[in-house]
Image (cartoon, rainbow, N blue to C red; front, top):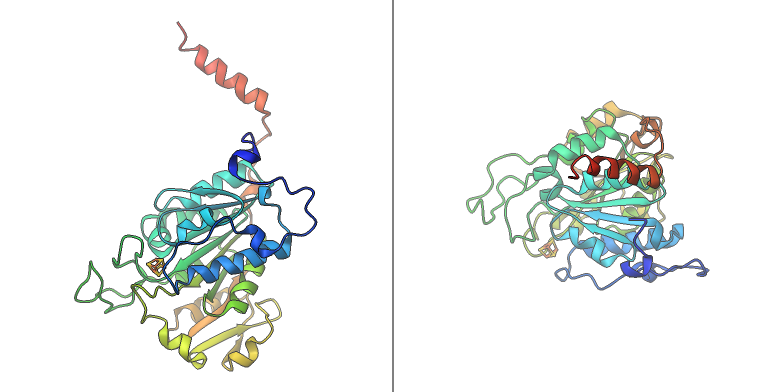
Length: 318
Ligand code: SF4
């Protein structure tokens, strides 16, 4: 990627820019249905990029396939709209090749927890330094309403017209069970202050930051989060000095639980409970091994790479 001129990627060299605002990071208007939770996630991301004053040419957004995976088209940065389920290995390769880039992955429940599930497990274990947004709307939206692994039991869809019969896969429990998981959080598109603060914490975590964003899909799963949107008492906020702290949240959510994000056992217990929806950082451990730091690969210059390639090609020359 480094050899492609910035101008060809539609990026501006902003070295002369003094201050970037959120809208500077919007490449074009998001094409999602009206009321889609993906808009909220995009807004939070733009705010974060502006707050951190990240240069567009130093950011990369990688996605798979799905409604939320259109994200890279809308962010003024490098972008890679990948193939179904493969966002995480693409992002891992990118981060290893270009450690100077801030890498963000945007994936959906169908993309990450189904076809991409194997990559999800190993990317979590590798703990490469990147921020992962799992936009979980509990359905395959782009392909028009098929049951995904996180679809609630009983929910009717094109593929389960009489309602799904299996209990849904819980991305938090699954990630918390993977060796070397280092950051696991849950937030919701309808609580912008919490969403923003969670992404900010995830961005500053060293390692693989996994953020499940509960995302409304008014088109196909309008009922799924409706009660929680209407009644904040159905939600419990996880609070701690090491957790997510944003102004106004304590007034909005009277149900609060002090949870130390270092406590993995309690994180697993809380993720397994279904009595309330929980928002916050479930687990965070910045001391876990980070693959980009521990892999022992001696640096190879571009000239050496070209010379090795030429030598290899010469073997086949007549
Ligand atoms: Fe958003 Fe659902 Fe429409 Fe997809 S189908 S753009 S997830 S509202």
